[in-house]
Length: 553
Image 1 (spheres, one colour):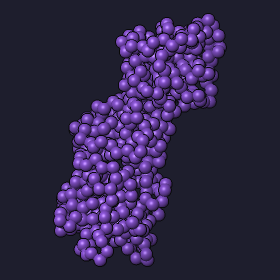
Image 2: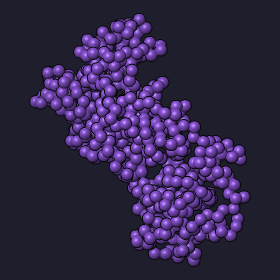
Image 3: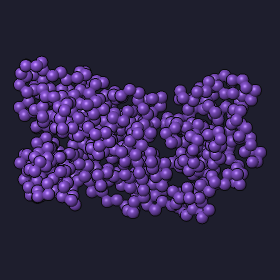
Image 4: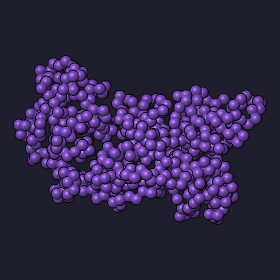
């Protein structure tokens, strides 16, 4: 190791006062987890805490010092931290000390990176890391000792320049071959909570200009095609985001390059978007995006998922676990369910308001009291959780209390159903201050207004890890039908669904004819059809299963 590298290592080892800006700078002084009350000097004494103005006075440098890296971190992951901000020109890993130095092409790029990560704590393998300016103005590394890091860097440089990496790169750098396309194919595993087009746009736009997104369901999995303006941006996003979770412990991103190089988007709605052509129509039966909601969604930088304006204080079950891709500091991250609610709100479907309860009981108001029954509410709210008890209020029959299995399910049902039309009226859904729904005293006739569904065989989410968790979608005009008997034809199903009071616009059987997609002319008609026909007996004890689909026909 040459004298220069030795001086860096010794600086880091003893934390001399001269290098104090490297060990405690503005990029992380707000974090309570640093655990450093001061800096140990060469003679072992604690220096005084740095004043805020000292931290902010750190001299910018294109060399950045990264600390608290996880043990098994790779050079690729460290380089990925800098890729969105510009060219990375050198790297030095100090693996024994869980630290690294990263040199960027320009001081401006380094300043942008530090400013960004000051507001947004970066995570590597779910661990928060800390970044600040180094006192060194450039890295002079011994290439013989730093060979692996140089090979990775060479591959990245080739990708950024649009060339091919040299043949000397190791197998672990195979992810750094040149980007073949500006279009990424994204699959989301363990999708326990809904992921919207706006959530994807917000996450991926950190790496470059997102031009187009198309979302769809294939093989019962939510997928998306996302086009950047430049293949290099697609490469950087894939490198940084593949394998990451959007919400805590679920919604895992699996990212590949698409064979397509350009996407053709016909409609701007909650399933597809062309950001270069805002004038595109929304398409039949599709809610167009509320631009104010989408704009409000993208302004919040404290978390990747944001909190749309007008949203209630998020309910969190116990401690608020920060999500993997959430950048909120000091435990301020959204819980997964409130993040799902935020996602729903961002797509312009919902304005959350009312009580901020902590139980699993919902208050539903503005119901059509002539038509509504406990059974119809159980069926509709059962799409988003296991409704246990339903009570239509005796003195106010346009309102009902619904007790879900837990608060997370209540939040999910509220985020998807508030503002939807049921029996011709726009319903309002809020969290109730009640913790449970009381059953009427024995022998008391309450005219069938209260019903206990605790032991219902129709609960969709009883089995842990059920596939139903991955198929929770907002109300849509397209319905997914399953458990269809072999002898039932398309005409039979079209007639059945027409009789629920709507118009069937399109129909498509899956290959085995046991499942199908059926599109009504409006979301309201689809909601009505689901209420009427979910669990409908098709004969031979085949009970039809109906849910909302993410697909269109």
